Image 1 (cartoon, rainbow, N blue to C red):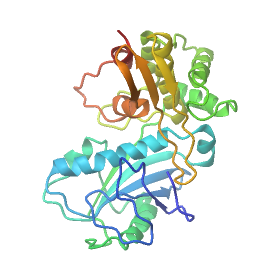
Image 2: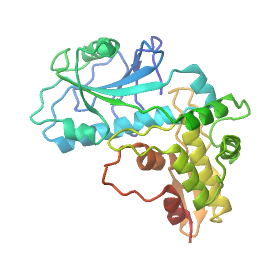
Image 3: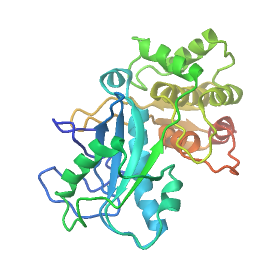
Amino acid sequence: MAENDAQTFVPGPLDELAPGLRRRSERLPALIAHPRVCRAPTSEGHHVVALASFKAAQSARNFHLAFRPIVEAVLLHELTQSRSELAERTSLQSIQVYVFAALPFDPAAALGLLGLFPTTLDDGSAREALALLRREAQLVEDAPGQEPLLRFQALLAPPTPVVAELEKHLRMDTSLGVWGSQPGQLARRLADSLDSLGHSGVEPSRAGIERLEQVLVQHTPNTLRLIPPLCFQALCDLIAVAAHSTYDCEVQWAVCERDADTGLSPPPLIKVSGRHGDGHVPLAEHLLRWCVMPRRADEQIPSLGAWAEHEFGP
């Protein structure tokens, strides 16, 4: 995700999921979901990502569909940074949405599906994001004003102590390159670290994937179940290894190096040749929707190992 020199405005993120990016100097159209996002620091040394709506949607469904790809793109960017990138940046504390245009419906249900819930505008933690979004509103044609009417926020549950320690081990490993540059190494390092923490059984098989899923994936309903970035990427790597070693597919790892122009690192992706033919499998996008995006309290989700077996097995 690229930022300007002042680290005030963030284009994006991921152009294909959030089209409509413009240079800062250009006037931007008022849209239901503004395609540029704001990254604001917090007093605790983290950052929040703030999104804006400058145009009224006509239905809750349209409002949800406008924001979903941008929320997913923001999360993909946070989850797929390399070890060296993570050393340069603060961690994400929350995602926020500020609604500037009056809506003919209550947007709470539409954003609740994305783990975002109503909160107050006079919260001191909103000060930095509000200042940046007011400046952004000045660049929007026909903006309804520079003061938001509603604010929504998704707080991210902290990782368990085991997962936090696992992420720490991976970040300290100076041998790790960007995802895909060393196929299987990130998954191997993760499995070794888990062994040292007393959690054995992680291997490139359905059972091994399900074992890692039990450790990493939170099951709290109606919330964004964020996984620490290197742990998330290691889970992607383990599934790629399983596709090759357990399900006998030919697998090519995409090397996810940061683009020099945009500053974006592409999310983990593999090309697979197997029983079901040839094709690309966007591992990061699939795991994001399966393991990170909110789940309903009554929703029954098959295991990630079951998905991998169905995707790559006979």
